[in-house]
Image (cartoon, rainbow, N blue to C red):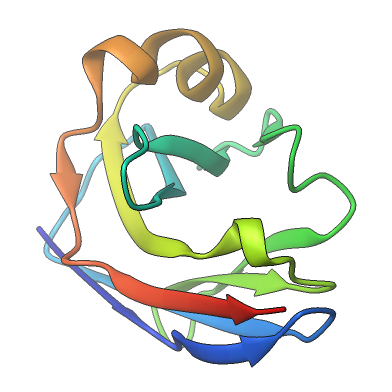
Length: 130
């Protein structure tokens, strides 16, 4: 399984960025895919997760209403549109995948914090200046 993130960079507060995760090499029937982030000196946190059956979508409290996840089947990508960015959004953003029948919300809010995901990309840095 390969997950390759792109789209990070430097942006001013209030601006927007779109991250993309190109996914390849897996054939799970059921899975959760999402974006996580880790800021300097802080623990990794779940940003947004969705399951392939589209049961539901998990958004972390700090990004609700500002971030949106979408998929592009033609390009095999999962994208993260980030609007109204804040300095506290500065972090390395990782794309991750887990084979599971759980919904996006159930897995990423309750299980992922202690069990993690099966596959991770190398991450892309997002820096938001004030």
